[in-house]
Each structure stands twice: as C-alpha cells, then as structure tokens.
Amino acid sequence: MVALANPIENPCFGCGPAHRRGLHLSFERLVADDGTDELRTSYTPQPDEVGWPGVFHTGLHFTVLYEVSYWAALTLGGHLMVSDGPVTYARERLPRVGQRHTARATVTARSAERLTIVATDQSESGKPCGRLESEWVYVHRSTIERSGLSLPPYLLDELID
Image 1: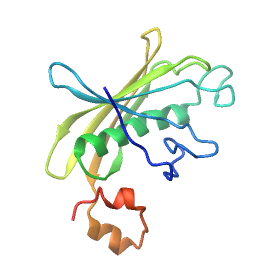
Image 2: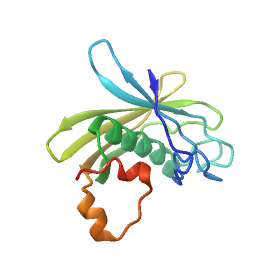
Image 3: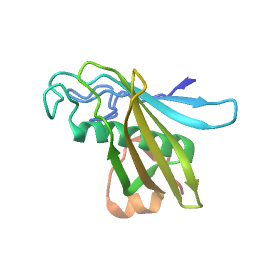
C-alpha cells in the first residue's frame, strides 16, 4: 500500500487538501498478490452532508466514487486524463452519516487513448454502497494550449506531448 502525493495547492473540492469546505479525500495504491492494481479512499460522511436525515447526500456519494476513479485514471493510466462521462452510476445503500465507507477503483478496460474505470464502495460492515463505471481519455498538451487553460505545474507534468 502506497499513499499518493497530493499537492497542497490542489484546489479540488473532492481531494484538495486545503479546500475550505471540501471532502479532503486522500488515496492509496494497492497491488494485490495476483497483480491487481487498485486505488482506495475512505470517508466518513459528516452531519451536514445529508440528503435525507442520517444518509449521505447522493451527489456527494457520487463525488467520492468519481474522485477515486479520477485518481485511478491518473495513477494507473500514467498521464492526466479527463472523464468522457459516467457510463453508469448505481447506489445500493447510501453510506450513513458518521459511518466510514471505503471506495476502490480499478481499470477494467484499456486502449491506446481510453481507460474504463469501475469504482465501488462499501460500508465498514461490508455492505455495498454503490458503483460507478466511467470512461477516461488522455489529455494532450496541445489540447490544453489551444484551450487557453492555465494548469498548475503539477498537472502540466502529467500531460502527453
């Protein structure tokens, strides 16, 4: 298990370490004995992160699954990637406020330009919470240059030339 580095200047709501109100997710990479590579994050929903009383908000639940998928695409894909949209999102049992849940993401398909990532999460007691399947495409430096976006150095280093 290896903890992933996340720059303090990362402004992301989901994983930015210094975001004022964000989820502050952190990630670990695990390689199983059989060679399976996955990323993992754990999160405990807070009392003000509800949809229905006592139940984690669906949109924030999606955010946790999406974030672990992004980090899996970046880490296991080897370069900066962007989502080409979720393929499926299904919730089985939303996490409960105050109860930790763990999300995992793995690559399920790979081509020269695209990854398919599946993220799942479960409660501490092992009950499944949800599943997100998403497609990710590599970001090329020329695309960023044409767009006029100004990315921080830690992201520029991850682009494909």
